[in-house]
Structure formats: structure tokens, C-alpha cells
Length: 183
Image (tube, rainbow, N blue to C red; front, side, top):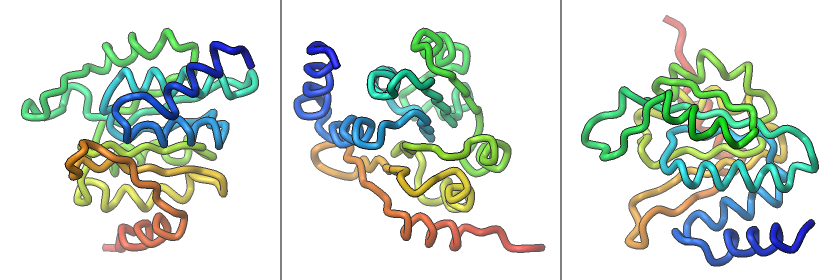
């Protein structure tokens, strides 16, 4: 690994702002994440950094990035506007395989969960509360493998957003709770 790559990683993992994202960059290196799923694009700059870092640690393997977001359907009160076309234009330059999926998490995962196997890293944005994720957790186990890392962004801390790592048992519990009942 080149010195510039090492310095860039070291900066992102230990000195970058916001502080809560540092754990994410360390997870990308630790898991050698090549398949990333982001549910709710919070910050496009963070997304670009994640993809670039994953490419550096992928050992030449292609990096796949998928995002589920409301895009144009985001509420005006969110303060963030990102169209599907803008997101595609920004992420296309990363040389990663990009898959952008518009919609709410549960409905979008119902459509694409089987086409997203063996995801290495999942990041769930703070813009999605427990209610919007209740049915979405059902689809997580089929997308993950034993070494997958799942992080949920929390915006309720005084220091801003933090990332909480969800363990496999917690995801299984949430998936069982969110399981659809037969009519």
C-alpha cells in the first residue's frame, strides 16, 4: 500500500470530522468491504469517501454500492435534496458498480433483497426511524453473511450523529419481530 493511501486512511479513521464516522472507515478496512448498502443517503461526501476507501482495500476486486433512498420524494422538511439523477451522476465517477433504488426501505428491500446477497457493510441513516424500518428488518438476514457489519446512525446525541453497530442476534430479533403475518 502506498504512503498516501496509508495517510488518507489514517486521517479518515482517526482524525476526520464528524467523529462518529471514524468507526465506519475502520470497519471498511477491517472487513475489506466490497459490497456496501446504504439505506438513506445522508451525506454524499461520506458516501464518496466510503466507496473510495473500499476500492483501496478491495485488492482489485470490483466494489458494488447500492443505496435505497427517497430521492425526489424526500420531505421538504428534511433540508436535503438529492435527485436520483444527481446521485447517479455523482457516484458514477467512482468506478464502482452503482445501484440506486428509490423508495421506502421495506418496499425497496422487498423488491431487491434477493439481488443483494453477501453485503459486507450496511449503513442505515438516521432519517429512517423505527417505524419505517419495522418491516425492512425482515429482509436483512438474507442479504448478510457471517462477517457483515451493520451500522445504524443515531442523531439523538449531543455530539451529533453516532454510529451504533448492530450484532447478528439483534438483527435476527428485529427480523423476527418485523416478519409479515399471513392475511
